[in-house]
Length: 599
Image (tube, rainbow, N blue to C red; front, side, top):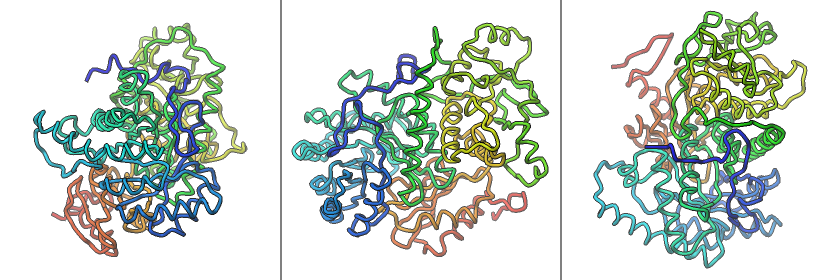
């Protein structure tokens, strides 16, 4: 696909928020001049009115502005009336969103009681059987017509009742029709959403917004960028707001880092009007993370407002397709840097000395290079003389941004990559200020800022090494460095988990089960395991995973290899052990450093 003419951001070196129309969700405006809205989703069973009301009240009390509730069937959707009434009786006016998959009749019931309905174009009217077939134009048109017949009545009800809608594409649940015409790609995600948007617009409905979610931050970032570029091409009245999120981000630091890479990098480019951080934890823990992400972007935007880049060059990378910057390989303290080598982890002399006595105990989180001893050239990317001197050097040089440079890190490194000869490797820093060891600081904020800045650049192929300066604790800064590399998909050094957030559809305790699976499989470096509460996003989001553990029915688990189910209806109490057996069957089990083959 030719991306040369596509533009998703008016200025890739300076913060500028994308201009959109306003989508009203009850009394809450999304887009336009409104702040970025923070939302979450209930984990309680939608049939349990009291639990849902209490959980929604708790979410609202910590700053959640919009609450989503799953509505699997028409009968379950009927209880949304009681949840809404309970909230309003408690004096809470937070808008409710019904999350719909597979069941148009559930949507038609839900729209009576909530301020917004989320539909998934991949499964609202289309079937997904992972069928491989060639669609003729006539067959394709027939399916679109069927989809329109199913979807148009909901649009008309949204108009009649004054409701909002999210057209929410998921990478893991594209329809067979879209998959066979466009592939399992960001473009397929965009085209799936645009089909529904055209139907809505034909009915005269505009109170909607889009989302393009994926569990892989690279795919998610590319899909949103492509959507914005396509909307821009379609014309000024296609300026709909966007809901941002990374699906199945997981829990703990990994879930926070993956969310910060995907959501934060887009917010930093002015894209996104409401966000949901999806963690495999109680929903109330999502809100502080989301609020901190928004605050971090706002703080960096203020840095941007005081800076200026004269005559900005075209960026050095394709914003819609990943390719690593092709620097030359050089050795730094015995470690290969650049030229496609593994992205290296730097630390400061002070931090190295602090952990030197226990390097053998740091395991996978060991520092590799001391920045003060590396010979790195630090400069301001606006300094043409300094750049010219480096570019004139006969041998490749390791280059970074000088501390104190008054630019937002993502913009500074984009500029450096554009002006520096491609042969020179680049050392990325999360920020241009070294936090002293005794400095007060919030670890979560440091983690999110580092993930947003470093992860965004790594997902665009920029960076041959990383240095975390914003977190002062030596061990924590090293752990954050490695976890960012893993989440960005550039250095897989441990088991990778794709775990969905709990919601009312979940068929087992996701948090406990995820921890059990981690305990049993956490030593399997490079193996990717998906843990899914139900079938909604299961097989598709597991396309990148090696193995999957999916709720099939209450108390029953299905196991997958890739996106193919191979074991069915396993009792939950046996399922983790059976997952281990499955990994052994496929010769991916490691014990004592050797692969154990059960074949």
